[in-house]
Length: 248
Image 1 (spheres, one colour):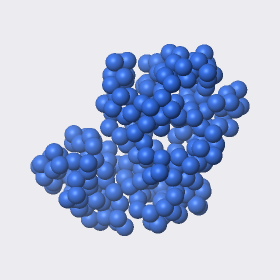
Image 2 (tube, helix red, strand yellow; image 1 turned 30 degrees about the vertical axis):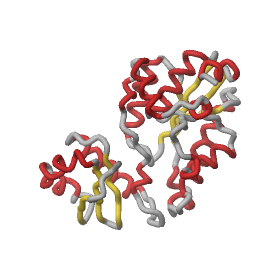
Image 3 (spheres, helix red, strand yellow; image 1 turned 45 degrees about the horizontal axis):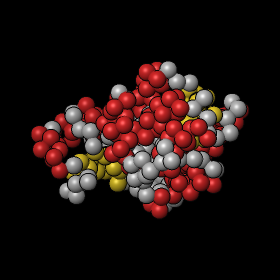
């Protein structure tokens, strides 16, 4: 099946839109092939501001219809307790909210950007999507991440080379309570690292310690900026360490 064939069969669709590589291309393709499309972006404490900025930029460039939904994920004690399957409960809450808004707008089919490279066995959130009958056209059409990047570049989407960026909650280890303060300091720390030229990295939390993870090519960049990184991150953390196991 091709995306064109998919949208011929599903010509009126709502899209769970994050502003990332996959959902950006999915929105682009839907606009090309479907009759009616609307995007829904959930603004929650788990998403940094730049994700919303990127989403709105792309929506403007594509002249797409979008609704931004504000959702208080921190009001759910199951989510904030941060169990091993937190993503399942988080997806239930986020996609449940999108479904409610989409149905109120007259949409019965909801899509997400899961692609053929994503490992369903390693993502508890996918179980929630399956239970809510959310369709994943990129996966159904066997489009991998690299293929989506290539097609996005050909389409002129600025998101084509955007690094993967999991939600802020993934920086906090399982079992450690997720609160607004932890998320804010993570966002501030990573925003600063972006400003230094890092793109593929994470600033994870261990208690009150920041653990920086980078790719092997960025180790020299860490060391050349060691003092300013320490000075800035210690505004939010009691200590800062570098993970010697590089990001792959």
